[in-house]
Length: 366
Image 1 (cartoon, rainbow, N blue to C red):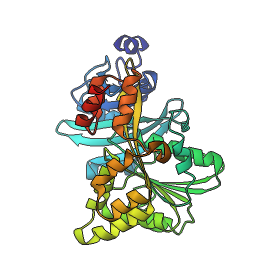
Image 2: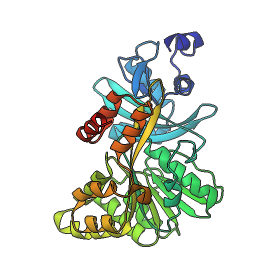
Image 3: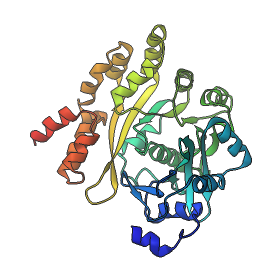
Image 4: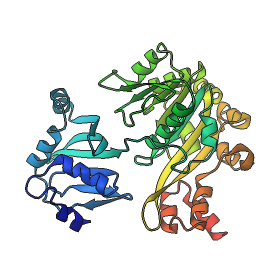
């Protein structure tokens, strides 16, 4: 990789942020990091790799960072020491960016976002996803750690709706990532900070904007989660994300956000409105690339009752029953399938498992 970057002579004497971002595309990587005291680094298949370039000084990073933002954004960053935004560079691609301050100066993280929104079929998502998005109302959650492909899965779902249904889709994101073109559906995409004050405020007013579908980029607090549940109950299909590693863990996280006296009501709302939880992880393939594992929970009367009666710990067992009929699956089962097909290594399967002890027993039984 270093030889290719050196041969291109894209950044030999003066560092050029646009050429650095172009290297993200050229090496099919997901992220670019600029940190004072290090060479620029890109992430390929979950691993950081340094580009064969000079070590960055504080002035280098500041000059490149400020070349991409407007005066208002610069003022916000200097006031708060944090800045989230997204942007598009012609002939290169679209990026999500975060600026932050370290003890040595500005740090920058850039995430590559495909300009063309992928379809559900392109990433081999299960057919049940196309059935879930036909729901008229309810809450569909896509969860997982940072960098697990949540935004891509959600964008693919909305794209499928866009190609098949005439709906008004409102997205509330921080920042807007995938930009959708109106095909059959009508998109209103809102950027928290630039177009609206907060997720909660945007959600409150979205109900007056005649939406059919609402995407919430991140369900961060009780106010946002409460508004999402209300929207899902009142005839809207709501998509959201959380940073949780399993389907049952997602339900516990939502309930635990609220005070004790509110939890019974939240359990009742969640039981009636939750459609599905898709907990996703990206795992390195043997050779190169990444593959997604998706733990899928789809609510049925038994699971609704377990949520309502505060028996979330029983949901995992319910997910293992009659899977050909329910279309549910656990992460452990998906990991075993990938191991049997020699797609991933045993080491990476265990490292990424949310139930490593269960997985080890299943591997021993093969």
